[in-house]
Image (cartoon, rainbow, N blue to C red; front, side, top):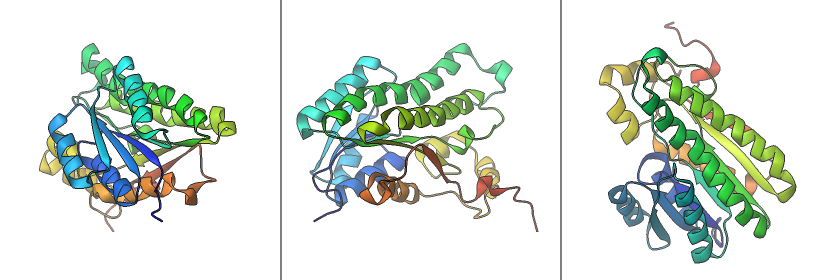
Length: 252
């Protein structure tokens, strides 16, 4: 029997990067998977890679109604919801705090934090109905420390970590586990487009491993946390940062 056979999994932000890598691995290990994103073309590629056990939905996680409809449609199709991986997010325009526009501030907060709240709020009753589940939220090392020129992103990701802890506290009695994953330097379409080659090299050099993570490396942790092997793990944030937060990585 495959590890996730009989499990219903919902992945947001699945049109590329970590979301796509996780969706493909879940499908390969027997899960029935719904992938959601605002990028229809990227979703189509994910479905092509993951196979026939995957269903796609076009969803804007910043829209409350869209998130509820997504969960409702997932339960209607799969009969239950066992795992929610809230991975949708954006980085926003880089600027010092005084130069961040109100529009960009709320755009990042609405997608990166409020979207996680909307998805979790919709998913929890479905998980209660099926006897429990796992909620995994993508945070960032920027959700644990500050980072210049991305105050909106830092605020949102700090919020994701705190929200995850609260979910764990409030719903442990319902057998619902909640965990956050803090990524560091990462090779995805978002990071490739948002940074120059020089900037990417500088960010990667802050980690002792001196390279960005591949999406599949983060997905490996996502799959473990969603599995029965992590059944006593909840309310915490796992760093997948190449050692970035271990200390100062100065030249030897």
